[in-house]
Length: 176
Image 1 (cartoon, rainbow, N blue to C red):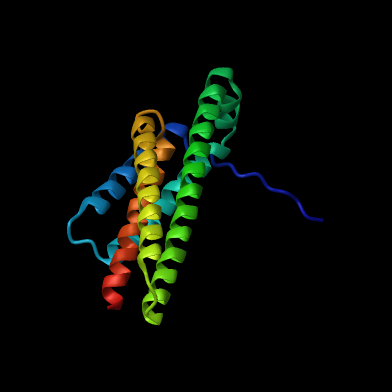
Image 2: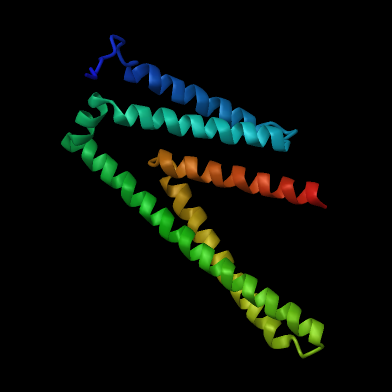
């Protein structure tokens, strides 16, 4: 017959997890801002970002965290954070759609150039879409800047996005 054994160890305190997350965030920030960024340092940074998310997940799964999330004051803060995250998600989706349109327009423009057709209408469409994308990017930047003080998740998403863009650029440079 199988028996379930309980662990005699006590879970780590929420404060130690919080300080660990803050230390890892500081370390990640230092890694990102270091001038000689290589793919190895970027990969290490992504690994540490994964560790940060794991620590946050551990903190959220503790019984005391579950109880505090249910309290009314903290529930309102969580709902506000979720609302801001949804706004950022909507903005990111609209940017993705705009970039897809921009990509299609560039492909049509390249096809027209190869065929030797008149490209003035394709150039106008490209300029129009580029302006649309630029306006949406400004809107996202303004929204994330206004929420930066209020939203730690938005700030982490912006840092992760910047981090991923730097990795992509480094991959392109090494490929050429």
